[in-house]
Amino acid sequence: MDLGIIIALGIVTFGFGIWFNRISNRLTTIDSRLSPLVVLHKKEIIEYYLEKGILPNPGMTPKMEYLIDKLKSGTINSIESQELTNALNREKAEAQRKNNTDALVAILALIALIYVLNELSKK
Image: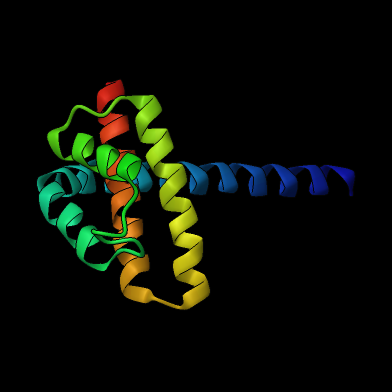
């Protein structure tokens, strides 16, 4: 009886390992396929954010405008990108509170762009 339980547990564990490996491989594939698209559309993502974001110009703070300009030019460093991500997360919370889906999509797209650029700079 104990041997049957151990065998069943081994089969379940082995099956879970195979499933987890397949999911991990699919996520890696999706990430590698979407990253170039996000970078390719960097300009459009930033313009969409500036048009639809919670704090579009002229209501944008000078620091936020500076960080967006650095992102546009591709010269943003990791500390600045973290600062921009934190500011965008605050805006995301505000967009969720106001139920503003356009701003939420624009903010999430910009956060994804920052993430992809950070990952590509690490490689």
